[in-house]
Image (cartoon, rainbow, N blue to C red; front, top):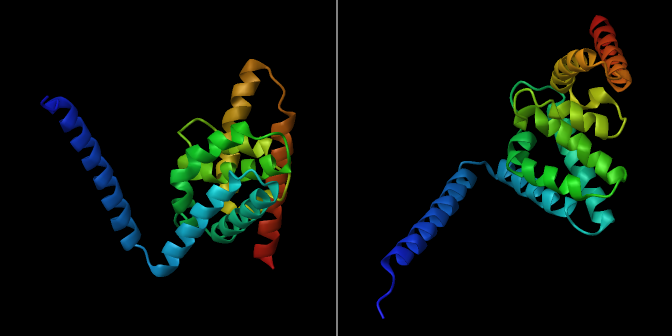
Length: 192
């Protein structure tokens, strides 16, 4: 019996597509410095560990990821490398977030998703705000000025929406107070 030419072509084209993806990934990795490649691999490992069944591993991975992002976003002039390298994992992390039980770990992941949404969220989705409201109540300024600026814009959009729908804004006002305090502190530091 002769092989089905349509089936063979599909298999060959699928194989070619996989080969192209592997080649592209190799080229992307070859373009990275040794330091950048090490950072990318470390962040990839953190993403894997976040999804591990062991809460201890999850916590260490989340704390490490938070630290990498926080240290890189303190003075953002371009998209920080941790955010660039975590972009491909944004959907995976969002999906995993939805499966997590309510816990501090889920709040920590929400914090990370809130920051990643800076570069990944679709226009008008307000995902930075969404995940900030679901996240921990830590220092809003620790994620950097650009994060706070973006969050302020999303709050303004959400505030207008809620005003027109006559829904409560208390949670937004708490964030506004944190943002005002952050800006006051930054301005005071600048004057000294």
